[in-house]
Image 1 (cartoon, rainbow, N blue to C red):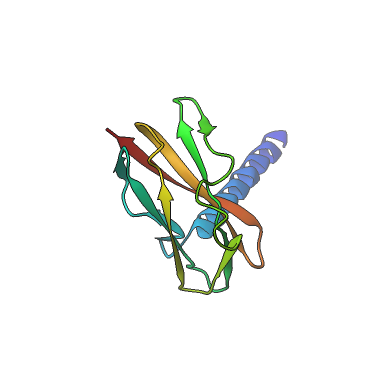
Image 2: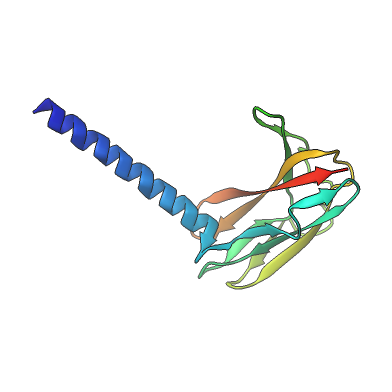
Length: 140
């Protein structure tokens, strides 16, 4: 009898994990369309990148103007900037209606070669705030 309960418990935990993963994926995409994207996957040293946020949801979203950049060290993501180098020129956040996009040019000329990711906080108006990440490479 205890083996049956143990098996039911493990199946329940596995089902809950799958539900959480499915909900996270739904938060990141709708019909496979990403919320956040870059104009390229690989940049040259000295480039700027264009970050696009698209509201793929049925309700409005609030997008922070600030962003975070992290570098992959081989073991973990290392935070490079605490404050956005391009922030402070506009409102603290943008409100996007369904289907609207927001493009932000980000100066990455200060980055050397390596693997990076850029993160931005996005809040669905009736949901929690999440930080979305998009990875990119910088080559010489």
